[in-house]
Amino acid sequence: MKTVLMVIAPEDFRDEEYAHPKEVLESRGAEVVTASTRTGTCTGKLGMTATAGVAIAEADALDYDAVVFVGGPGSKVFFDDPFAHSLARAAREEGRVVAAICIAPSVLAHAGLLKGWPATAFETQQSDLEKHGAIWTGDPVTVEGFIITANGPDSARAFGEAIAEAIEI
Image 1: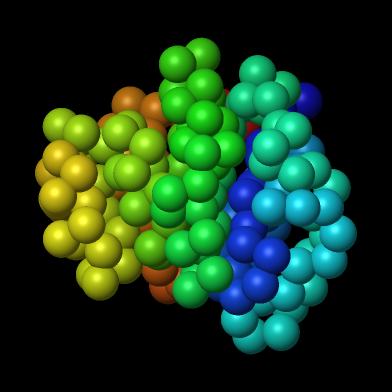
Image 2: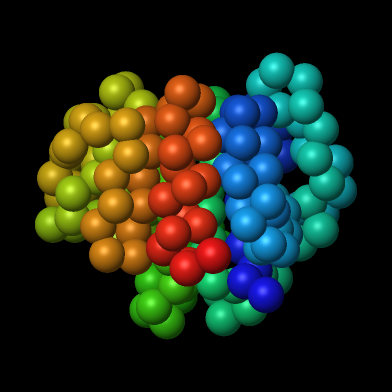
């Protein structure tokens, strides 16, 4: 069974960007584990609640086939978080899928993973991604090797499908 770690902010993650990819992945047979800055209840921007069973400081990228950073205004907490960067880098170094949606691709950019890579994000992040060396596509979903980025809630299902295809489920 494939296992996916979905990283959400403790507050103000984007509900659809968590729920829709999770639904796609689980419907294809993946086990989805939720992580945040701490374990326990996390609250989405639109009121959804989710339980983080893992704190990112304790997450091991080798335990997962994909590490996914969910967007929403709260995801700014991960932009310069050393644990988020370490997790993303370790996943990439081990050939795991690393994915981010909405403003969360800035986490990958700040971790140095998008330098020279095509990527997309919510339009407010274009200059940040480019400043960190990404090649802006502006597409709803961009897949380049094992890195998947998406631009927001309207692309959440397609983002989930791209992750599922990348981990071959």
